Length: 595
Image (cartoon, rainbow, N blue to C red; front, side, top):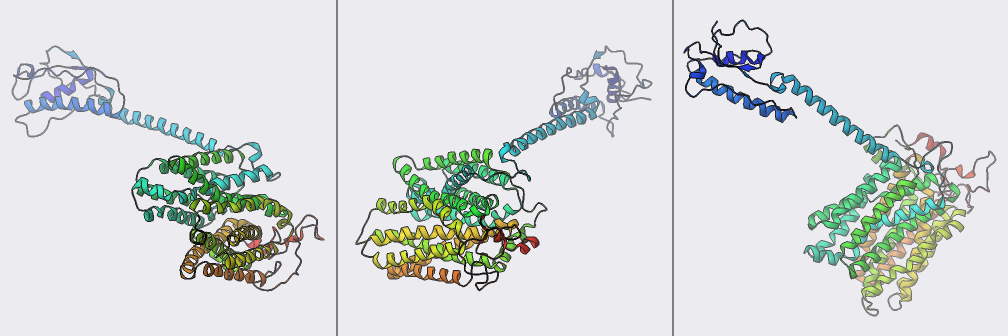
């Protein structure tokens, strides 16, 4: 059986030799044919991967194809290729008398399965390495010191140090939203945009914060709070780097919205305080964290103004970056673990709908949220229109002096934990709210009608608004955290959405009224809002379980204080419906839960 030179060539591969053969058609040795010389394959090379094998195979194919073109000019079909691994030598030509040269074929050419096997082994090693790295990251992320580990028999204690840490974290986390407000003019100059366009940065930050409260905070009822809070802070701090270095205004705007969206960790910490703090100390513990949030607003504006005045404005962003990583490190060590309130899982969209359901089925939440709406509207209307009043005759103060008015509230903020411990912890939260609103109403009336000609009016109003807001907000939060313990984050979301809506309303309506009638018009709106809030408080008593009435009596003292045990050994605060008589609102509602 005659064979083509191509076939004879490949038949001799198994002996690692290649010798010229005679063509069955032309009867001429290939080695003697003009332009043809014996094939010399490349020397053996180690196999390093699929690309090396492809290169060797391509080089071998090019040489054999050149030979086939010369020896098969009159052949219609391509030469057949014999399996080089065969040991059959019966069809070798007897004329193969040429000198033989040893040739080593790389394993990747003689056995294609070796390439697949080696590739699979490499992929397996890579996968194992990635799995090991992920396990290491997971181990580091889930590590926590012994005092922070949750033990059902001995839950973590909510100490004073931990309470102060929550306040510190809340202060310098919420500051992210307000660093830009005092330096918008410098941001406009750096990016070469108008002041109006630069002011959109503050709007985007607030819009992101509002979206985060609505879409992220409810997840606190689903995920364990410790890893959730740490992940949000780590993500925000990492994204914050872009704000420190970017030269694009569009990028700066987009990242500002994202950072505002994830700067909601204080709103996750507040319900956690409700879980960790004892019922009879909940108000004073909340006061420290709420004071930290209020202080963060002032600290951000003051620090950004000072740093931007003496250094580059981006330094305040670098400061914010460092503080965020500091907060992350402190919480990583000290933040206690706490199990998920709903370990069986919840449908996200049903969870969002349950916020609306809670708002219209829990009378206490509805009452507190409406009060928060009017309170926030009055607060923002005052501070927005104050700059207009003080910058015009008869005052004509500079922006520096106007800014110092913000320091009036610092003393009130720092004293909040003290009077919370001495007063708010001992009375029902409804009485605390009524007391705060009454103080604020008196201050707003004084400031409205004498503020146009005497600076004492705005000063008195600033003090009473801060005091009243602290009393009312702390009392409201202490009350609502007794509603649905397994839905505290959704309860907090409903409350904060109402308060944030009040801020937007106070800013818009206050500015419009000031433009129409001046300081007296905008102040009169504040008087009306505080009056409505007092009416909402009065129509429903502290122990009423329904929407209206004073069932349960008029006693001001809290029912769940340790000194007032009930006959069956439980704290009397386990009665439901109190504008917060403690941790036990509606035990039967707890059992059904909101899913």
